Amino acid sequence: MDDSVTTIGLGRAFPDLAGSHAALWSGGALTYPADPNASAGDGTQVYRTAVGRITATPPSGCEGAAGTLIVSTRVRLHGPGAGQWQDGSLMLYRGTTQIAEDQATRFAPVGHVETLSVSAPITAADLASGNLYVALYLETFHIASKSWTADQFSITAQLNGCAVQFLRTFVIDCNTGTVLCHSDTTLDGRPYTPTGQVGQCSTPDDSSL
Image (spheres, rainbow, N blue to C red):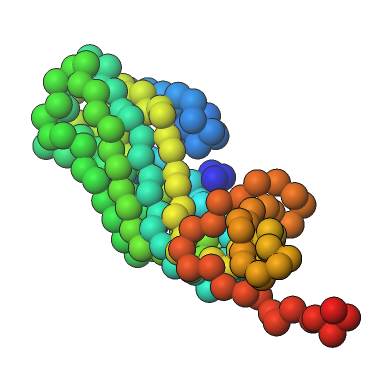
């Protein structure tokens, strides 16, 4: 994740949350300070917004895979004012197109805590493109000022259809040719547990046998 300077077109009421948002993306806490009035927004309300760009290189063998992107974060309302009609939202974007959203509880009382979570289908190409964005906006002024803390941010990409290479070693009875057992390891010798269907990468060369 990195901070994004790309606007996703939320409008005047959603100004950027000043400063770096890296603390949130790395799993730490990010404070949304209360705005004293609505002058930073549309004159009625202000929703400070942190936008991050998802950057990831899919593992080798996963280039054509597809799966699900899951993002979550916890938010806490400190006040002094209570929430109003639209208190905040966690969103996923592909470019400027919203693909998922989880809205915070409306009219949340001071001290309210909840975890927002979104998920959306993606491809390995989406991850590699750098065209996926996470946006978290929280209401910092509407009728009254209010501050928030966001933390426990997590992001997971679950890809299916990856072609992962590993070594399978067989123990064979020399008299009967029966396979007695097998073990699986990564190419550098570490234990490996395969998932999904297992296939052979290529026909072994037995010409020297």
